[in-house]
Length: 307
Image 1 (cartoon, rainbow, N blue to C red):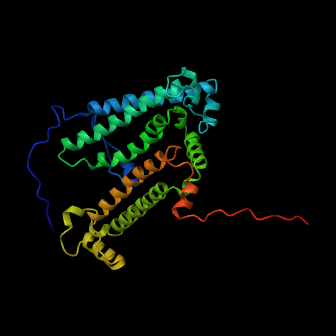
Image 2: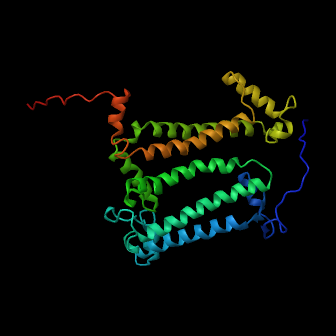
Image 3: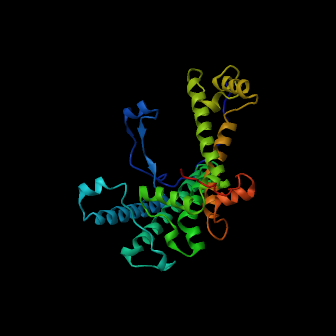
């Protein structure tokens, strides 16, 4: 069996090590593939900021939508999916409107943005404190980039908060569809093509990795770093399996490397696709596809003769 040589040294986690509460055991979690221990968790400054500002956003979002149904809990539950907080209308531009005409949206978006960046700082500082590379934080920047482009960068560039989506479940789906229709169909947007490729590729890589490790559980393949170099182990069998299937080796390091870049690029290319969908850059992706040679030019409509 191969062993891991750990670098000695104390982790600077603070006097109380940043944990609140005591761990509890929930055996039910083991039925879902988790460890039965729940907690304790690290709070810290950035995590507290993330929870507080995220809670304020959630409170504003729910209460404004609750007011839209006259505080009727039955109607709130019934129409929850279609309720939303709308951004300011186009006549306000980037100015601050009255609360009921988009002001609540601006306030909620501010707290949501602070919460997202605070959570980024939380996972970044925790990785540094534990002596590991902050790749989780780096990966999170892909999602942050997509969020910033959709809610802040693109609307500011266009000088109009109404270009951002409303806060709501159906509202976000409607916004995605409407932007696609307005700018000639996202199907012909090359960055959208790449984003979908990386999205589906991420699910494929995760399924490949999970299926391989699960299939080799009896060989302790889930203990990857403990036996990655030992002959006859689960990881070696997995590497042989994929070499036989694909012609080249996939190991416990490379599969995670591919999965990371696929997942990160999904958000980055999606952000680029949304950002360039505006009159300043591409006004019609279908026409862009014709000019790029990936669509057939549209010919004249053939005459229709009625009997």
